Length: 218
Image 1 (cartoon, rainbow, N blue to C red):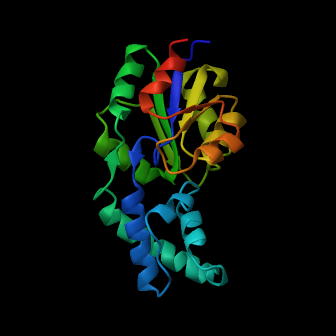
Image 2 (image 1 turned 30 degrees about the vertical axis):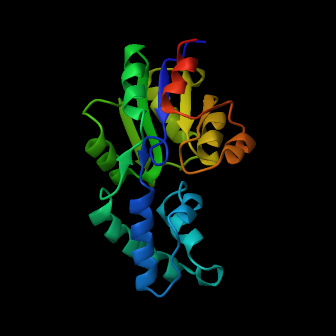
């Protein structure tokens, strides 16, 4: 079928934000005497919001609310000053966005990153108007893999879910796509493994951004 829109995940799909997230989290943990982690280890902490990142990073015996929210507040404060130090656009993403425009296919972003930082990242790294709609995690809307945010985008674009592709790098994204009845495409250049995407039920897995065009042109 001819797809009419692509909904993109942000972290690990459009932007490599891993270093900045890891650096801020490690500083917040170290300041409170907790163990820190390598950048690669953070690939498995990210994707379900900042609170879940902190819960996963804390030792199992230190996940009480005082510890979680103390580190979370410190992480947010640090990240607010350092969110764009090492973050970069993945190679091939800008080419894909231009090619998608050439087909007349519409574009949106749906992230579990807090909404304000999702907007900041998109404004910093992409030209104005690149995406018709940009949504991060908001308290009043269930986070991915709940399809509420995806449905909000679809409704705003006056489309049906089956007319949309959802591109993301984690099982959370694949489950979101499937829950919303969208084509679930896994981005293999992101934070998670091909095995995770396959087990989550990805219908398509692509190694480079431009490979998505093979499915949009059908």
